[in-house]
Length: 392
Image 1 (cartoon, helix red, strand yellow):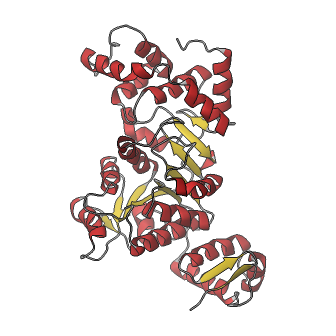
Image 2 (tube, one colour):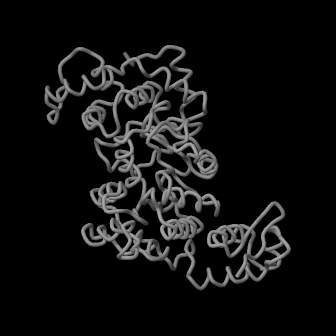
Image 3 (cartoon, helix red, strand yellow):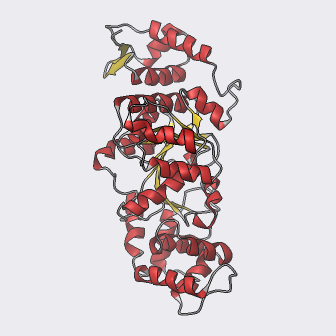
C-alpha cells in the first residue's frame, strides 16, 4: 500500500521534506506522516511495530486484514485493539498533508538532519514525526536546552521569575523549551523572543493554528528565531489528552526541566514526572509557603528530589554547563557590561543600538541582548526612536 506513491502524494511529500538534510526516503516519510494521523500521541503499539518493521512496512500491516506481526512483545489482542483505534482514520490523511503544504510546514522524521535525537529516549512512545514551522536548526543538539514550565494562572512573581530565567539563559545561548500556554509558558517564550534567543514551542494541536488565539503574534515571532512544533498533524484540535502527552516531548527535548510556579495538582507536575522518568535533571523555583501557586514547586523539591532554583546560574549548574567556559559569562562580566550599557543610555533621549555600542564600548550584538534583558524588569524602555533608561 505504501510501496509506491501516486504523483500527488510524491508532490506533497517533497513539499513537506526539509530543504536540506532529509534522511528518510519518500515512502518512509509518507508512512510516518500517515502514522501521525492514524494514532494518538504516545501510542506504544504503533511505536513498537514501527521500530521493529519500519514505518512503511508497519503501515502496510496495520491497513491489511492479517494477524499480528511476529513480534515477541506484541500480543494478538493488543494488535486487534490497536487496529480498531487506527482504522477509522485510515482515509483522513489527505487533508492534513495538503494543509501542511499550504502553510509551509515541514515534516521532520528520524534520520533527518534536524531530527532532535533527544526524543529517541522516549523509546516506543516517541512520535513518528514532527510537524514544524520555523528554523529547523533550533532542533538538533547544538546547544543546551532548558524547559521552563508552570501554571497558567501564574502570579506576578511567577511571571517575573520565568522571564528573568528565560531571558538570561537564552541570551547566554540556551534553547528555551515550553508549551506556549498562558502564564509561565508565555512569559518564558516572550523573554526568549525579547533577547533574540532561540526557543521551541510544543503545541498540543496542529501548528497551523495558534492556541490560545491571543498568542498568534508570539508564536509567529518565536518561529522566526526558533521553532513551533507538534506531533499531531495540521488540523488536529488540542485536547486534554494531547496536552498531557505533549508534556513528555517538552521534557524529552530539554536537558533539564525547571518548574517555575505550579499548584498542587498543576499539569506542570506531569512534565516534571516525565523528566524524572527520563533521568533528566529537574528543578523548581520556591515561592512563599503561603502561596497555593507554589505548592506544586515545593512538592517537587520535597517528593521529586528537585533542585532548588533561584537564578539562571542555578539552572546552568543543573544542566552541567561550565560557567567558566567562554560560552558562559561570570556574574561580574554580566554586571560590568550591564553597567556600561546603562551608563550609555539617556533617561530622556532615545539612542539606537549602534549609538549605545559606540558609547559603551560593548559589541552591538551583546548590547542588543543586554537591552532585552534590562527591558524585562523595566530598567530600560524602547520605542520607535530607540532605547532610553527607565525610571529608577
